[in-house]
Each structure stands twice: as structure tokens, then as C-alpha cells.
Image: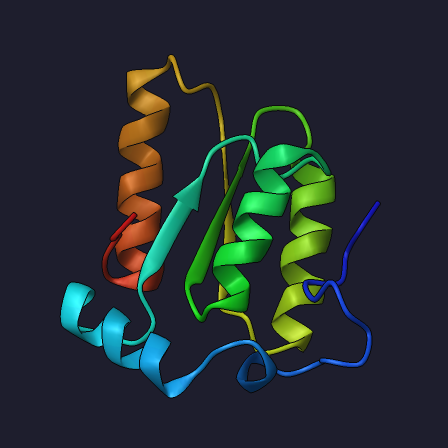
Length: 116
């Protein structure tokens, strides 16, 4: 299980990955330098986690999602927080309208917005 957010052990800070130009672009597109992204299927160590990791490397606040891998997703969030990444986890089926409504409320309460 890959818990560290950064792919290169020599680069351990967000500033090692994120340029001033990227920050300016985020500000112009989203009105903030720290937009919020929800990546479904990202609690488990598969493609979704790698997508979330890439967003984290560029300064996004991360909402991980899992149906069954919630313990793993919670561990990842806790680890990423140690690296200064604002991260939370939502759980449930993407087919469940009630679950999705709950996610949106949780995300809004915790992050104040969702951008991607």
C-alpha cells in the first residue's frame, strides 16, 4: 500500500512540484490556489489513488472515495495530512443518490466547495 503522496523521496514538499505559474493558473480558473477535487475509487491503491496523488502534487485539496477500501483510504488521508495535504474520505456507492448527497454535504461542511 502506497501511503506517501510524493513519487520522489527527494522531493517532500508541495513547493518541489508546484510552480508560481501553476498557482496563478489555479487562481484564475478556480478563484483559489487550493481547489477541491473528488476522485471516485481512490481509497484503494489503484488508478484513482494515482490520479488523486497527481492532483495533490499540484496543490489541490483531496476528497478520496471508497466503497469497501475505507480503512485504507482513511490511512492514506492521515498520512497525506502529515505532508500538509488537506484530505478527507467519503464512502458509498456511486449509484446511491442518498450517499452522493451525503458526500456533497460532508465536502461542503469540511472543504467549503468542490471544484473538480
